[in-house]
View 1 (tube, one colour):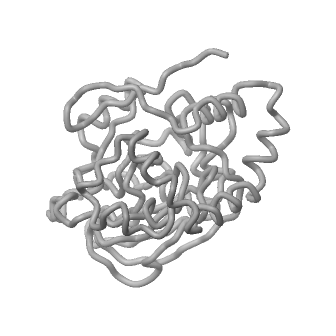
View 2 (tube, rainbow, N blue to C red):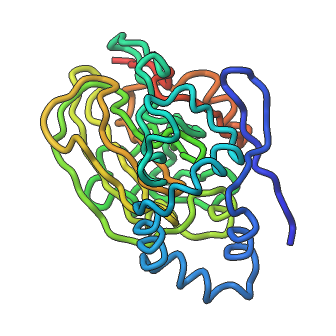
Length: 297
């Protein structure tokens, strides 16, 4: 089985590194080995396994896994508000809050910030309704945003892919008002590039929540949380009304997950480094609150 490494650009250092994938050999077997097609169906199209993970990671017995994951993924716990010994379960640790000073952000109204810690890929202008993730197949905003996509044709899109090592709370990238929210059931494929390269329409098939947000200065944008294998649940803590930039929108329980933000045509321009890296097929490791785009209108 051919192993194609996942290379990511660290925005803070400018260096390219190979991503450490938790459970990599199982993901590659499920998605790249033809003998695993039945397993792929059972694991990723049924929610039973992920629900089982969720129940276990919510239990006190899962606490024993915390320290091992911190060491394996080199998680910086100096950023967390609580000590490792204070967490009551693995999911309690996984959805940890950070100290406010750990994620500073630019409050300027013409700056759109990253909604989460993660690996960012941007599409400055959607070709019709199609976008192609790293090493993946063409995806469609029509399937991702059923009944909501017309206004975004020709617009811009950002994918923020979270890994188990990341801070798993997500925030609003610009202030505004929630006008519509839809929960869409679906599969729980992995969002890792290994899976995207195998062909499933992750963004159109996976469980997700699509929220339309009206803003004072950049039109309406859509904030979509994509569930993935092992994710116990998507928990939105802000579901209606107005909010400020960087206010918490919600969090993911255990698993790799993705946030997708879609903008209307002519509203924003993505940061030059994100555009350049994306054009080369490289994701950029970005922290929540760091600039992602500027407002054009």
